[in-house]
Amino acid sequence: AGEVLCSFLTRSLPGEPSSATVNTEWIRHLADGTTITVGNHRAIARDRKGRIFQERRVLVPDDGQHESPVTQIEISDPVSHEFYICVPQERVCQVEIFSAPAFDRNPPARFAASPPRSPTLEDLGKQSIGGVETAGTRETAVIETGAIGNDTPMIVRREFWYSPQLGVNVVSQLSDPRLGIQNFEVSDIVLGEPDPKLFELPSRSKVIDLREHARIPK
Image (cartoon, rainbow, N blue to C red; front, side, top):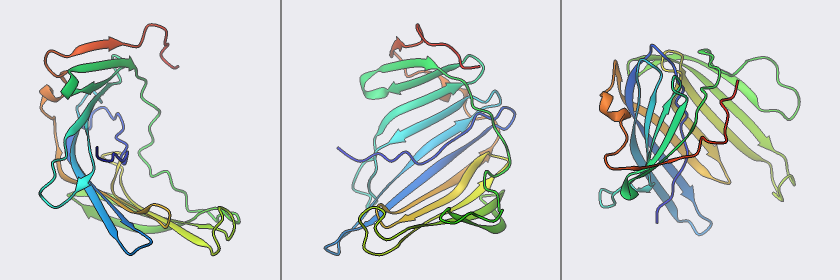
């Protein structure tokens, strides 16, 4: 069995169709000097209605010898309020109620003075990545000595390059001594309506409806 890392949030954004590939890399340095590097490449898409399609794939060594299979497919629909999670190998989908959260095109970070012990935020400016405009933010936090049994302070850094047009972080990096380095990058960005077949359930799939006793959040 491989590892799966939930790395990327795609928001329902009607009127801004696109498709792309999310590339994930996870690097860990072990105490004996060993370095473990795994990753995957998975497809995402959003249509004009705000429906979202995305694959989930296993993280595997990026050596060209390991297959990264699709473990599940997720389809969310803000109009019908349906969220499907499908396991293609088992030909099973479950459907839940979906309600798209409120969306703000602006980056969530604010560059005001930070109170003691809270993460510091640094504005990295703007740059074009993959043909879209992005705004960069670096967040730095310190885990003080003794907070988790550590004998020295630990530095945790996150860097984001956010696209207001796409509503996603086109590039993000986490550097955490406890986890290693996690790199996420969106590539092959195509602005325009994706293939509508992406939003169809896998053929001959059994659908398990979990909506009976749930209500749509208001």
